[in-house]
Length: 179
Image (cartoon, rainbow, N blue to C red; front, side, top):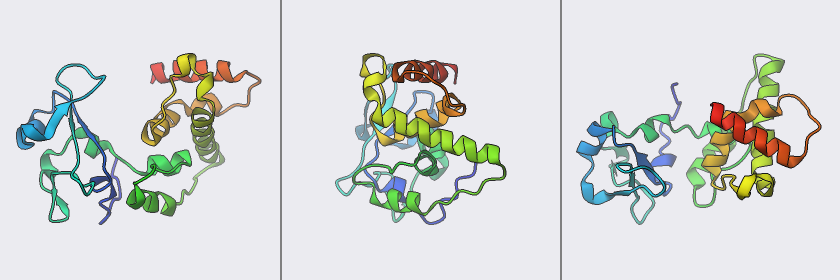
């Protein structure tokens, strides 16, 4: 997927922790070890790259990524349109990303595409508003995690159904496992 970032560097300057997987040897070879910490709740070998006091990635210098060719998979995969698709913002302190999110306008090639987008927004709203319905209250709370989960499980919301919130939460959990 080609993400149309243009000159936007919101994700590089918005106090984001960058997950780096152990198999990303080229990335790990260009990031100083002192900038990496063990990723909590991840298997051994997973690392996080933090951010500077001003919220910028330490590999972001002179308004550009100094390791672009070897950037982490997290950076390659990041797409702020996920927030716009889910109908949510990126959270507090993410002003540049939120400006970009607010500017996205979606066009639909079909009614089916419009219904899918509506289902993504409904999934995100349910996840945010009905955390208590999930087994053990284990629904994501971070905007990025909510948006990603909504994108994964939106088919649950394509067809209207008479179900309890708990039943819908279980369907979301099952759909996320199948993804």
